Image (cartoon, rainbow, N blue to C red; front, top):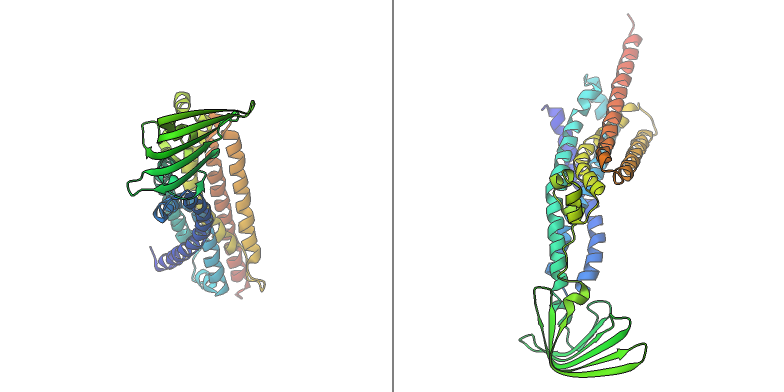
Length: 377
């Protein structure tokens, strides 16, 4: 790798890191606000919040890194043209293909990073995120351990605890269950404990009273009990079947899935196939937007208005590529045999980058021929 390649590649990596940091921060803050509201409101600690936000970072990076690579390439080549570095390099005899070689290396590097993220880190992080979400959902202790407050752990459930001992025993418990639209049940107990079971958390109440109001007849039934077990896990849906997310499954499982596997996972086979191929196609696609950006800027000549027309051309060419992906996804999720349409976007991007590179080389050749023709014999 020559000095020019190292210079351009180092500039691209530095700017890529800067733009990635900025964009990830914006997306991360937006995601963190929602997580903060849901987790802290449920009585979870700050460490749980930080853990959940960290697990969302790989998915955010998958969205942000291609954009950062494209913007970094536009910025670097715009600066090189504005400071006449590109003119010097072209005068020294470097062809358009030679000038774009470090951009190709940069695109391959970003593609490799996206491949690792999309096929390894993001599925693992998503699996941990879902598992931890279920653990937090089952851990109702954080929601109940608020003495002297009326709290609502889930819809239709109201709980009040006068006092909580150092051993975790509840004193003077009030619990109202409105999950049944036909009846409303109110439990009061002098003591209670929150215990775990195979089917989810259960609330064991001692020395209490259960009052059930039939909403249709307005009749009240009262039952006294020495001990009573209330299945909170059944009310909030804990301990049920573990549903799977496409984003957490390994790529090879998605690509090789058949109808039986899709039925077992309760997922759509066409969506599984497309999601698997899309992970590979996404890593291939991110190689070419930097090449498109650099080649577009090399198409223009000197202008007192700068290279804004070329920048707008580069941005305008990327938009149809996203539209192509949308069309491919719409068709592929209806028919599993069309899952290979996921590679249509990178194929079109590669063709576009090739045409633009050829155009930049031809423009450079015509400019050189005119210069040679202008020299007197």
